[in-house]
Length: 284
Image (tube, rainbow, N blue to C red; front, top):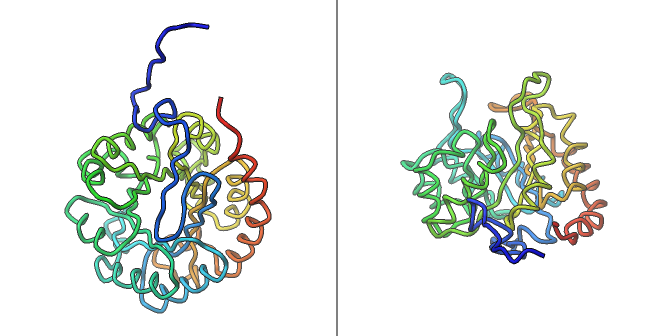
């Protein structure tokens, strides 16, 4: 056996060589990582009070562990709905308190960071901002967990280096998210890379969840890919749910109706035992 010192990767703090045991993040009574299976559910964009509260009640009843909703929406077109901003955050906070679920929402800039931080329990940095280094450094200075999505053209190492930016500023509470990458395929919105779950679990102690909604852009693909993610060993899922997807102001085609989400949760619950066995396997 070689006596040479093991060389740490560039992402030293996020590396499994630095910390072998899984990081488990505690958020208002919920646990992310380890043997826990997190399900974050809710609408892509917060539209009004009725939509947010009715969806919150539905996903809570089905077994979701966190509530999501977008208040600041970075859209490809400047003419698309951009979100309700602070008013939306207030509605998300109200809904979260009503159903007793931690809340997740995206922060898109350093200018709006303090506003989002004021209202939510977990701050999401989306795919378009994965390498916004100024925003990553600001995220490192908050005491709130960060949900960091993989960029649409980012390698796994680049995702972990983005997490390193946050950790190097003092915030160790990072949840990674595989949400599909851009390839030459056009039938789906992105190409879901489930191998990234296995790679991240081998390389890093940070929890990783999967977002099959953004990965495919198709509601009929969410259930099978969500189950595949759980079997692969993901620590959780992020699922878009809307009470009436056909009138959604954002991403309706990739949103599940509450009834479909409930069926998905039934399937996920049946896979929990298998998932626990997968999470027990140590990466070699």
